[in-house]
Length: 217
View 1: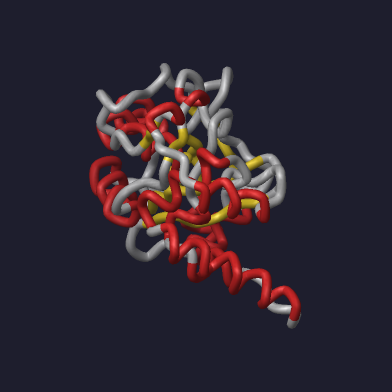
View 2: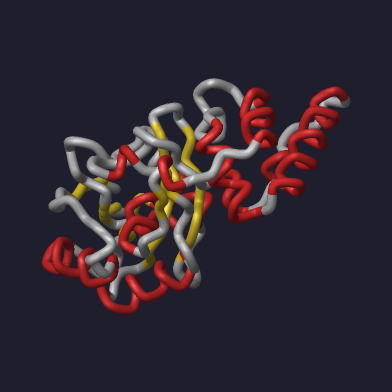
């Protein structure tokens, strides 16, 4: 079996003027085979879709100012702006209820209620400094239709599969969207050391060479 190899792909700074499928094709076309997996950072997909907001454009409510205090300091929702951005898309009372449910769940040894009931964006929002410049000054939402985007990448490039992933330096690797037939959880474990470089490295795309044989073995 051919060895797996992770290849980060450098790009220029991507914006909402870019189409993510066109961009991935431009930077990876001659590097990809039918046995490879193309992975892309979810924040970059979202940026190309225009799914971001500037903190100064948010109207911060007292509910957001209160609720953000119950989020660990390292979380994207720990700031009033981050929490308000979630409440604007998921509803402030839904988010507040989810926080209470999450607290009560922890009392009985159950975790994850906040992210289960707080809405899809609860786990996807990146607060300021959470992504590549100049968007490190913005709050970035999760991408729209990530499975559809992954499927379009696979179809365009002819690769084995495509995945949109949320990966960070805290050893967290989360599947956001996958193309049909891809075992996303298996692939996510290969990204645990975060090959993406969304800051000065500008490598938001990663090719996992020979992934097909790895999944099918």
